[in-house]
Image 1 (spheres, helix red, strand yellow):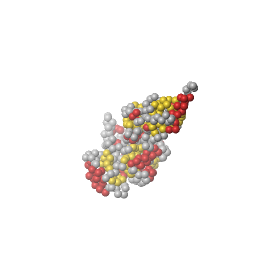
Image 2: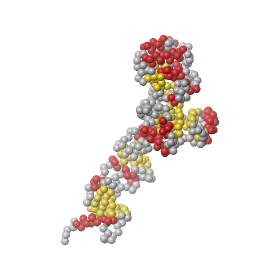
Image 3: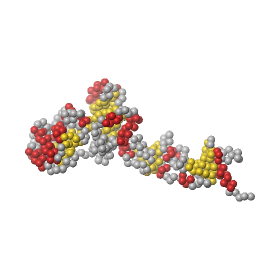
Length: 494
């Protein structure tokens, strides 16, 4: 619906009349509000829900100067955070929000009564009403008010996601557990709470206040977790670029955190405000330059994520999204990227770095991980766990291979000849398979035949009998004495 007479349009549909494109702050504006009230009554809507609110740096029309408080002060006496996504307001408040948008006061939102009514204020005083009913009475009322309604298929201001395929991370139990762990690791982090576009609050999180801050967040806020970016004030000022759009964040002596978005023309004015700050930091506003550790959006109290807006994905968010696709016991393929000096092997599985601890590399003995794998090698492994808090995925190479130990257990009683591989105070180890990574068993000193007086050395061939295989502890017990006895018992009598 508009205040513009369709008869005053040229062949291209452009308005050629004398009607001003700003609000008259009078009878025409009141006519708009009365028409909306008529549609709300026809749709049976007694309250409206605020969706995707925007304030401050956003000026929808640009034809009237914004006012202090964006026209919201009298509507949300508890503060601007009351103007949040999902807030339910009575029709009377919703009409005043439309008035504020018609006057271009610096705030904008979509208004909805789910499944029944939508109200969008558009450019040049165009108003878009969506209803699930014909609303013929409301249409007649609109015409009687001197406005011009026109049926269209959809509002150009209907919500459209930035990326329909993007899976938004919710601020759920996993998120808060991850945040607790991050705070412990970093000692302190910053939480940026965006409750409306261009409207945010910053919180410095410690182990002592994280739950208090959590309880005070505006519903459906977008959250961004930053490292402890507040540093020495002089260094922060020196870090200001020659020309750029940045957000400057500073903390005063009382612990109050303030932020403002400025360009190079405003640096001098903001620098003077930092004179009394005890800490400050600078974040670039250009996409991809400065990114938080990870982001999320607050779900409703029932755990369902109903906010439709999205955060800009960070590497941490992409890791989370990938981890959500994994499950314990899943078999994955990856490429070995690093064999660390402490033995852990790192594997790239679809852009995420997983790890293989030494015991999970092979069922068989080896001296160093490089004996089993090499950098650049493609491997297939099983996912042992998916740790969403620490964002770690341990893998196992041996889990996708047949366990050879049951076959070894079937060899109990067998006499073999194998090389001595190691000498320890309580016995010697002997390899019982003819291969470099063959299994080794222990010949305890009590099972060594020392009657000949020969000294056993590494590399000597020793005849042993397999007397026990402990599958639980993966240990093989051998006996030199019993092997010799078995050989004697097998000889013919004189």
